[in-house]
Image (cartoon, rainbow, N blue to C red; front, top):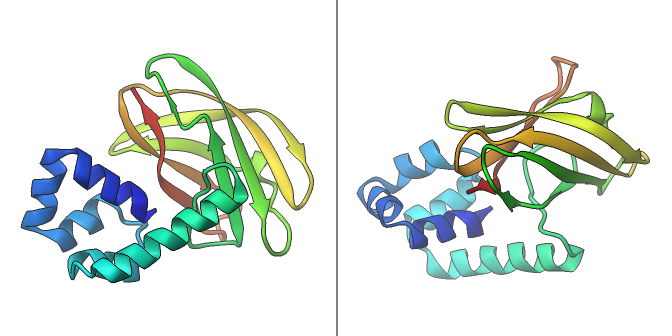
Length: 172
């Protein structure tokens, strides 16, 4: 989400200078899931376009209640609760998936991990409830180190593309 990129760059001086030196390379390396159109808004410093994109993200997320993450793939919205917590402790997380069109794939059969660089925190599905339009998965995982992790869902069917969502969990 664009709001996460801006928050990171504005809060962390090392990211601010990295972005200033090579905006395109920085965005491709650190935020590969960011759409080309949003990347272009940031590279060209199109403030009106950034403002419009942020307004759309915020209004879409507030309208649905819990923070949600958009991604390229099936027409599904995800929300994770909680989105922050300690590292090196076993945590229970709740992942809610809602199909906006059609029906959900059987997500409980997918491999779910949280990733940060080369660090992988596998998530074990402890329970699953819901129907073909909305599902809640209770996950258990331990984040090995502090930082922002992306959520990855990989189907057991190799013909399906994995779902990768950046900046979904922040471990302290």
